[in-house]
Length: 330
Image (tube, rainbow, N blue to C red):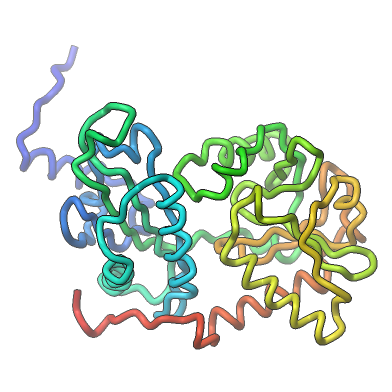
C-alpha cells in the first residue's frame, strides 16, 4: 500500500502545477483578498477550505461580461452583489469603490479583451463552525475566465424545456444571488435526463417562475411581452435591460404592451414565443416545453430582435460600458 506523502511548501506548489487540468487554460486571472493581490497562474487560483463559502455556502456572487476590452453593466451587477451581501448578512471587506477597482484591475491583469468576470463576497475563513462569528473577516474573490458559450443551435433552432420537479427556492433565497445553486444544478441534470436542454421552476401556486439561472419571458398571441413579478425570482440585470428594449419595441409597434404579472402555466403554454434571458445565454428562443411546441415551433421574431438589441447594446452603449485600464498596470 502506497504511503500518503506529506509535502513541503515547495513540493505542494509544484504538485499543484502538475495537477492543473486542461480547462484551466480558460482561467486568466484571479484576485484574492486572502492573498491581497492577483495571480495569473491557474495553479494558484485557490481559496482556503475553511472559508465559509466552501463548507457552508455563506457567500454571494455576480458576473459581468468583458466585451472588446470593456466591462458591460459592471455597476448594476456590483450593486446587486452588495445588495445580496446585505441579505446574506456579509459585511463588505472594502468600500464599493475599492471593490470596483479590484474587479477592473483583475480584468486588466488577465490581458483578455473578451470573457466573463465573476466575483464573490464571502463570510470568510476562520473555522468549520456554522455561524460566521469565528470568521477572521469577510473575503472577496474575482476571477476572469473564458465566457460560457452556448451552442449556436440554441439560437438557430431553439431550446427545449421541461417543467422541473425540483422545489423552487423560497422568495427570500431566490432574491439573494448566493452560492447555493444546488437546486439550479439539479434542474439542469433533470432536463438532460429527460432529453431537454433546461427546466422551468413552477411555484406552489402553479405560476411560472424562472429557469435554472435565467429569467423566462413570453410573447402572447396579442403581442404582449410578459414576465413574472420579481418578488419571488432573482432580479436579473440582463432581463431588466431587455425589458427596456421591449419597451422600445412597444413604441415602435412591434409589441402591443409589456406586462409584469403572474403567468399561469396554462397561459405560458399558449404563448407564440417563449425565451430564456440571462447574462450568459443573452436572449435565447424556447421552441418546445414538455414536448409541446411554443408557437410554430421555431424561433420567433421578437426573441430574435431582442437578441440583436442586446448584442448591439453590449458593443456600443456608452452608458453601459466601462473601459478596462490595461495600460495603467495593476
